[in-house]
Figure 1: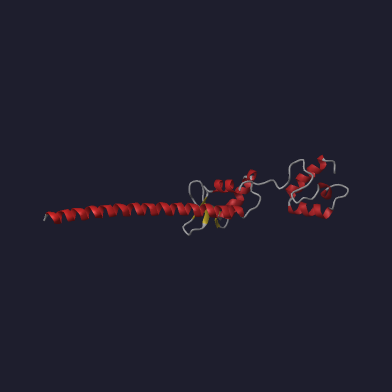
Figure 2: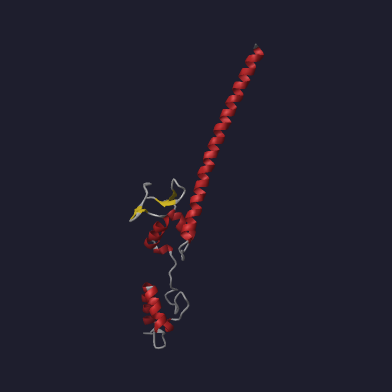
Length: 166
């Protein structure tokens, strides 16, 4: 009879240890799943940010965006507000790409200047200012730049005036 009690106590203790180990393993599994989800989010955010060129620092931009970009129930990267609510655009939920583009327009300091330093005599494609402005300029090249990137054209026109080309 005593042997049976010790066996039952032994079995009860083993069962309790097994339950405790099971609970610990389940907690570890949950923690690992959360870590995996965070890593997936980070990778998707980096990929989405990299779709747009000329970031000063892609990792910094991704870090700043990470509080508003999360995986939704379907495992797709979506934009959320500061309170955790899904953000809406003109045609339904705001996509991550739309959110990043808006973020980029509002935070231009994160984007490399398309022109060189203010003292430069070339723009980002390496064309000299004299080719764009002045007596030996090529109107077709200047016009193309003005149509494709009006802000850059205006910036370079100011530089050309400062350098006496026009």
